[in-house]
Each structure stands twice: as structure tokens, then as C-alpha cells.
Amino acid sequence: MAVVKLAHGRHKRVAAGHPWVYGTEVESIGGDFQPGDIVEVVDFRGKFLGRGYINPASQILVRIMTRDKHETVDREFFRKRLAAAWDYRQRTVSGTNACRVVFAEADFLPALIVDKFGDYLSVQTLALGIDVYKDTIVELLDEILKPRGIYERNDAGVRKLEGLPLRTGIIKGSIEPLVEIEENGLIFEVDLEGGQKTGYFLDQRENRMTMQYLAPGARVLDCFCHTGTFTTYAARFGAREVLGVDIAGNALEVARRNVTRNGYDQLCTFKEANSFDELRALERAGDKFDLIILDPPAFTKSKKALEGAVRGYKEINLRAMKLLPPGGFLVTCSCSYHMSEELFREVVAEAGHDAGRQLRLVEMRRQAKDHPMLMASPETYYLKCLVLQVW
Image (cartoon, rainbow, N blue to C red; front, side, top):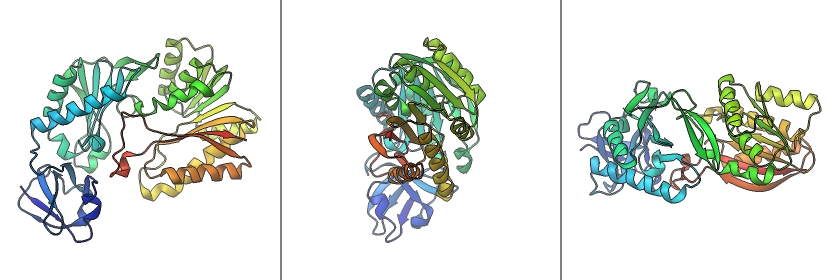
């Protein structure tokens, strides 16, 4: 087994538990290896730090799989990891038949995503080293969860950075392209083949329950509403009227079916529009809402683009605040890892100042429990959700 030796002073982050080794942190590599092979990682003194898969084509040279020197990365290794991940979800997730079963590094299975939607699984292997074990992983998922079908959603662009092809398709059993899932007493349609990411945003499940105390009697605006999950929750919990806005017409078609399937089509309307433009238009029209939800896609996927993302988040929050009466509520989210919790709060506070409004923090929420955060890996904490009262 090849040995990757970290340079003096560049080992501390990995030694503290972070699962990624960058090429710039490496002093030397001893022994032969092929991309995707398992290698050992040691510090500058030769002390064992972990074992993981290597890919020189990636900025992340090694992703550590185990810190146990005596543990072999084989079929039994994956069986134990997958069984532990599923046991954790059975303990922490309730009120739904859909959840994230494996959350990559946070489940000690780097670059592996597995989502469960009713009787079906959606799988992503986003790095070369985990893709090597895809067949084994699929067989074990079939044994442990016994799904009717497993669908591969390996169409994420990050695979290109790993030298991997983009592909989608059925890899086990059979698949219904459109699947209905249950979530907190509601029914939602999931597009396994063409939906965003693996088909549905499971990470906001617990945050959507804030509608229980925010929505009763409210006129609600749901920006970046996608397939209308927040919209449907708001209607369920007593909103008198909900307007959902999204730029994607195909997502809005699903949103309309979702509100109709749950019996709220008389309360909910949708508009295909750019949410930035619509917020400005509503402000010019002098419109007002009691509750506004902002759940945009990630405005930045790199540190270089952070400045532009800050401007975007500030703009939408400022515009939303101007549409709220004194005492109105704002639920505002960021799913950009590079937008830290502290920076996000600062940006929203600045938007409040520029809008001439006082903000009262009601709740600071994060991603759902089936997306656990590995404390040594800040990258696993990406979703921030602020519930604010605006005065």
C-alpha cells in the first residue's frame, strides 16, 4: 500500500479529524498506486493518520475512509458503514418515508450520497475512489434496505473534476420516474430522473415545520419556491393565501400538482419569474405580505465568488424586508457552505439596516438531522436558516 506523508506543519487539520488531504499538504508519496487505490496517510514523523482513496487528478488528493490502522476497506467495511448510517436514520428521522441515508463524509463514506424516497433509492458516487466500489455499495444497499429499485444520479458536474463520466439510470430493480413520498402528513411528488440533485430537498424537512407557528392567518410569499414544499406547508398550517415564485417552469408544474394533491390549490398560486425581479416589482406595486420565505439555490460554490454571493443575499433580504409590515416574519436561508453562519447573519443584519428595519432573531436553524455535521469538517455544515421578525 502506498504511503502519503504530510509535510511538517501541514498535518494538523487532518490529524484533528478532517477527512481531506490536499496535494499541497503532501511532502512525499512512497510506493506505487493507481488512481482510486487505498493508501495510508501519515504525518511528517510517520505517525499513522488514516487510510483512504487517492486521486491525483483531484484537488483533494486523498479522502480518508478510516482512522483505524487495523481496519481494511473491503466489503465488510462498507456493510458496517452502511448499516450504521441506516441505523442512525431510523433513530433520528420520523414522520416521513424519505430521508438521506448516507451523507458522504459525515457518515465516513466520502463522496457517497444515498437518498431514500419511499421504496426507492437515489445514489451518487461523486469521486473516483468511491465510484470504484459502486457495485459493492449497491449490492449492500439492496441487502440492508431492500428497495424496489435503485437509481443512479451521477450527473453532477463535480464528477468531471474527478475524471469521471456523467451518467444516470437504473442500477438495481425497477424505478417509477415520479414517486410520491409522505412528509409530516403531506404528500409530495419526487422526480427521480430529472429533479434537482437526487430528486428532492430533504435537508429543509424540519425547517418547513416552522410554518406551524408562522403561517396561521398569514399572506405568504415563497420565493425560489421550487416544487412548492414551503408553499404547501404554509397552506396546511393555516395561511390565508400563498404566492410561490420560481424561474423554473417545470418545477412550478410539480408545485401545482403538489398543492392540488394535498387539497390546497384554492389557497396557492404560482408565478414563473426571476425572484429578484419579482421582489422589486412587488415593492414598486406597494404589495405587503405577513410572511416571506427565501430559499434560494447556492449563490456561490467557490470562495472566489463569495463577494457576488454576499451582494445577492443582501439584495433579496433587503427587498423582502420592505414587503413586510412591522411584526412580519422572514424565513431566509443559505445553502452555500462558503457563506458561513456568522457571515450570513452579518449580511442579513446589514440588509435590515439598509432597509431601515429592526430585526429580531426568533430561531437559528440548520439542516435536518439526516444531514449530520462532522465537527472536524466544516464543509458538512452548509444550510443556514434564520427565522426573523421584522419591525
